[in-house]
Length: 637
Image 1 (cartoon, rainbow, N blue to C red):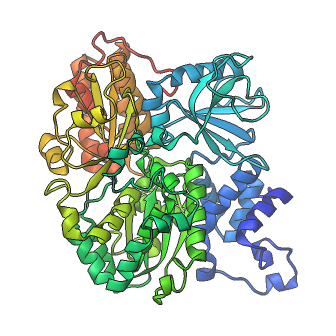
Image 2: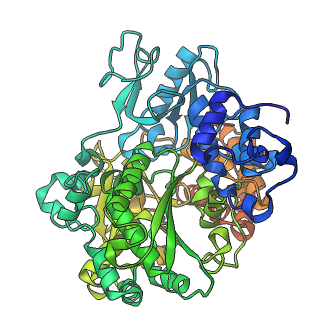
Image 3: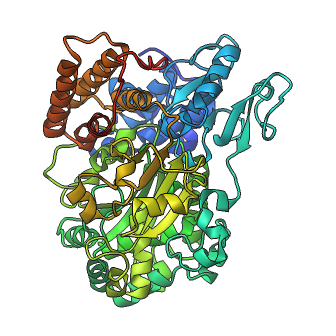
């Protein structure tokens, strides 16, 4: 409580919040300070700035010191214990001093099967174990960084006057002379000889391979501007049809827009598949004001990267579609909550928001129609759970990102207790197509129960990983063939659908259709569009252990079924893998099934409810740990 912020820390916070207005808010105290104190609503109304303030400290000095945390608490009138609880909730924040440059090396599924363990071993041999500071350089293992099509990858998190955070792709560790590196690492002094990779600005057709084929490009709807339009140019965006949908929405009015979205039968693309028109109508009809609309860009499901590609390559489409959603549902303020590990996407979206405001597409008089709507960009800080809508609300409000019980539902009582609409990036950009061609025409694309185009994230061992646009109704085999099939030819040994919260299918199910109705009937999931294909070189037991560790780490700990269940799941898997079971193997598998059932039935949110899906699907369809002595995961048990 007595720790004092340094001048640098105070400057970082004041740059965000402005100079302190009184002695109670961090200024020098005088006689007047003890006569007047501001509290209540005026103090609480600034609580939502806690996460940005913590980002400011982390970015400036590389960690959140007790003095820095005290100063933030004082400026925002937040109890220090609560501020500490928030700071320790997010993986990208550190409350312990650490180097100003830390490399986060992904060791999740797509990177794991593409050499990540070799990269981690190289780091450990040169710089010590993760978290070690003996060399003055920091590195850590990381869950999926959303760059799966370019695996293995890493995120360089920097502070101070250094270059901003940035990602590296196709990472490899080389010897001291740099032999074997695909390209020089344009990195910090001392890292270059040991750590190499390509800066994450590849040719666009490497991340969205369809755009390299002129014939396929002409069929694209959601990706048609990717690789064509300059992501920094609003004029280029408008020259390729940008802001035509917003013009139509303003000319025809909210009821028309909602009707078009309803007629389109668009279902949410984030995993829940909720009817978008129903959600928008429910928000618009709420009598309580103000309303808010949020673009959920906290894309953290392992294996998912489609939203990142859209935000990086077509950011004005995200801004335009969120503006339409907000105006249509009676909102004057929108937010983009973007994943903290997406520095390039955040930079380009921030620029796009500023340009839209400057050209009259945001602000008090949108396109001269007398309608007010603006957008604020907020960065997450490394918490998978914040992809859950109510956890995201809490995060935006400056609280720990823990889910809320439902009801009340967000359309009734969401952000700041007000009616709130929320969709992910892919769902929103579909609206541009719907308003342009009409809801009924859109509904004719795909199948009756799964309308419109869909973005799939293909990775693992496919020949050409990347984001692919398909119409609902293609088969899993079709999708893999679009990505060039498997690198070594033949069929995959296993395919993960929907990410870590999804499930595995075997080669006997390659002809299943990728639609919502087929998924419900067939007992599989489309989730967030992950299609991660594995050849027979992969140890599925190792993948099961990594998924279990992921959910153990990412559980927010709020509810017992998830907090305890994810730990017990991982423990049982390790016992089966090592052959040191409690009782028989059948007993352990029965325990896994019981834990899975409890998590599904009693967890507060979707994280706990789906945390066992992938593991259960592996045991149901594959011979797991056949010798009872398989992998012993080195990194997280």
